[in-house]
Image 1 (cartoon, helix red, strand yellow):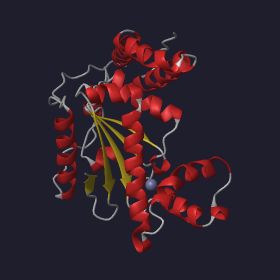
Image 2 (spheres, rainbow, N blue to C red):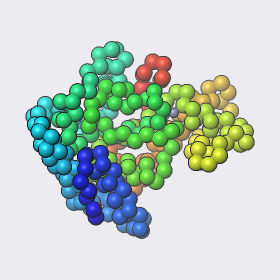
Image 3 (cartoon, rainbow, N blue to C red):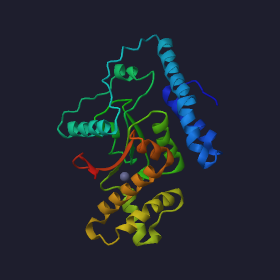
Image 4 (spheres, rainbow, N blue to C red):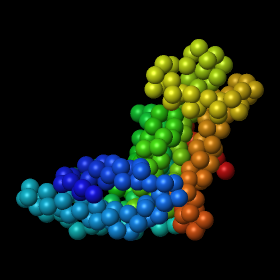
Length: 268
Ligand SMILES: [Zn+2]
């Protein structure tokens, strides 16, 4: 396995890619064991290598990373969920704490230990760190339009579980999601399905739209909830996720963000 030099982000990109390459030829029963083994050995090396490379870059640039003063992050599913929701409450009440400073960024340069994963929509109005009033390094974020899963996306989330030990995965949809609306429209009239890869994305949401086809005026909100719940169920059935959930180390939750109020509401 090749560990390239570069900054932390490029290390992560290479790590995930190499991980996918390495396990792509593995039979399904062996995949989880490979992931766990990489998490305990190779991936931890990769994370350390990323950190040390970033540190060397800072030194080479003539700067000194300040001593970390970051607060302890939660390690349990309940603690992680409580912290996320508390951050959203700070945003709602105009008490947000976090602003990005170069000093703060440098404090995260030597490694990452996010306390939660959020799988969100790519919509530009749902920036996860701002929604939860969090800082660089706090949340491991994956986003696709309409919260549609694919193999590389699932691989990214698995990385968060096995290599970063995140105790929480939140699937965060949002009201007035364009991808969900497109799926409802395509469900009503298949001729409205877009061509190409965009059509594939919209088609992935159509089953959720079909589940709520008789909901009338609130069909878009109902389709969103149905899709988020299905996505949570899909992740909970993933072997890597399932094992951590069974061990009490991980929880998967669904939630929706309101574009107008900034409020995150959990699907109970
Ligand atoms: Zn959306």
